[in-house]
Length: 67
Image 1 (cartoon, rainbow, N blue to C red):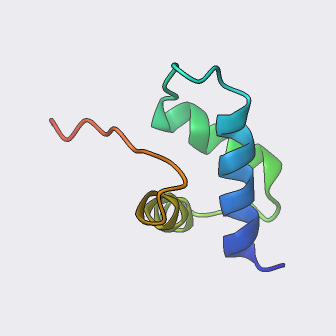
Image 2: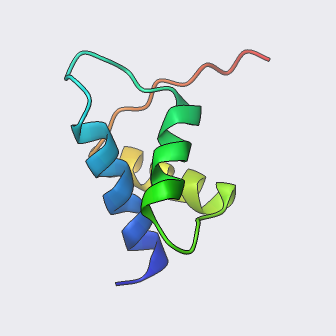
């Protein structure tokens, strides 16, 4: 299994532990995935995996674009 697949699986596992109506902050999700996947994924790898999961409708992302 490659790194990208491991990151996506870790994201899905982390989100599955949350109650259905709760949202998870990006920082908390990144921290859990980094602890679960070795070697630690980069921020770009995490963002790519999140984008892939959102595009395949496995997850629904709600992001705050305000700066």
